[in-house]
Image (cartoon, rainbow, N blue to C red; front, side, top):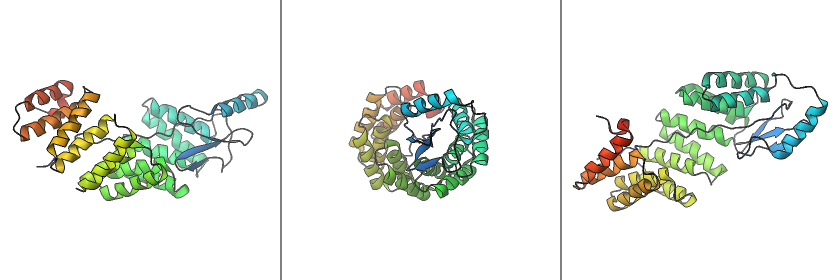
Length: 282
């Protein structure tokens, strides 16, 4: 009995980095371990913080610099990069790709511009092209976490699961605390029918966040493939308890209940259909 992952997570990673009115030199943008480092107007290096658009100290430096300098025209790679991120987050993928391309033309060693353009290409299913961009980003900065992760996602879509495992493993070596990387590697291992290793990865994910709906659901799916049905029911039920509108968990639990000869399976299937008819189908 085949139990495919009903929830093939394709997390999109976008490096959100803004350097407002910040001129840079050719070597002024670095991506180390997936982190973008930006230089302020006076040459100060700042580490990008995902919780805010720009570090407070950098904002203050830019404000002081702007008082004595004319505004920077829309011609620097950072500004094109900034606009590309804005367009990508707004859903204008075509314009985002255009802006990242302009940033690359102005700064050929801008690893994160390649990585973000690759992410945008992933979003419109142009995976062969996205892999080329991720390759370029990784050539410039081998420890670029977002590029490795994005390339892994592209390999997943191309059903090149072994290569995906390699990229996700490289990501984990750089950052052991990102739950989505473990979930993605578990999915790749699952597709390779390496259920024990996939199960171990989900355990790592749950150790990071026991309330993750995706991790609990994935644990349930993998448990089915391992023949551990009671454990599977437990984790699928946990996923539903955490998110009562998560249709894949109802569908998978219903399928398992049906397999086990329990009449309650129809309730789960009907609930899945109510939440998302596309999940159940006709």
